[in-house]
Length: 490
Image (cartoon, rainbow, N blue to C red; front, side, top):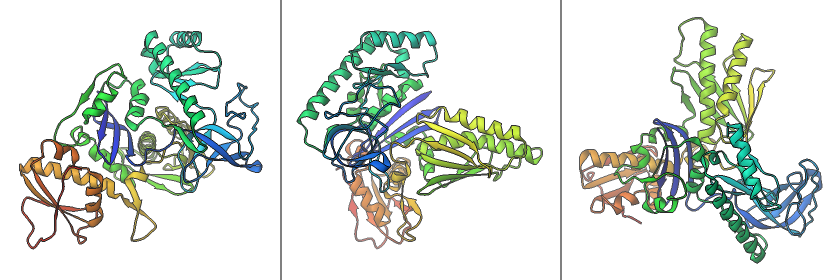
């Protein structure tokens, strides 16, 4: 069974796609930082860099956005003319006001990537309000069905607009499609009104929340069940998809209950073990991500070349999964174990390419370099997962450690297990001060404390002699403990 699991806390939201217990996709979004991809702004062109074929646009964020000249054609009203791809010219000057949409998050010292090719996504369709192009997803395998969808949508599409027909539309009725077309057109009209009323550099339209995006992006993947741990979320999303949303009300965290917490925690690991005993080592730098393949405990049953070949095949499958789960993007260099048989090299490369087809992000596999390394690229949009799950090490100021927020999630799961297994109403928890602060800042225990545990007394105390990634949980008050704080629902 394939499930979409939605985990709500006041601090952040998490969404996971799980297929028969295996984590296939995972996303996190902080409550105080939702990201800006998909947002539409009334931007003001600050300067045009002719040598870079780009413009820098003030969208009210910390850094100006970056608009490539080859991306779009805009006039004084910020609208794109319908021109064949490749014949576009760029006609903006400093001081021009344009409608633009963020297509890539700010990363490092770089501002957001912008486009004037505005798109409005729905569950079945994506509205192209400034283009007359209409086309269907290639993932709709039935050619007749794909042709019908293109013909039907085109027949009721307003002049000057276009639509991308998403894979999920394959199972949609004509009424589903026409109703969504109307809703998307209404949304666009509201955006135009808000744009006219907005000031320069202001946000005009905010992209949907993580949960709405997760539902929108996974419905075509034949998800059998959507489960959420918050009644408000269930109410908000119900009726938007063609299946009910289950409300989870158990004591344990929803990710723990469905058996994926441990898999999520392993996304912090530099070393990734494969089922056959081989392993990957994933290292990220400013310029690229390197992945090294090692035989590890796998010694095979025949000669060396066969062992190496089988290890590399397993690694190719795992690498595609890790890229998706960790949202690793940009340049990726893979150091497979050296193979002497050319057929084996090509087989491993084809296995990798096939596995990458399951990725929603665009990937391009360049192939083996002269040094025997495999080079590929993966499209950058949202921030990588490690920006949430890892943080710079305070001690060495060079490496990374598990983030305070991720440790708080891990502590919460251990604490819930302890209380359930020991059937206790009073608990004392000792943690490093960094994790102590995060527990109270995040409100991570809210759901339990507001419901089944309303009368439980859970006391936390800070002790920096405890390692950051460890904690002490007991039913009895530690001897000599004088200072502790009861955690309450925020």
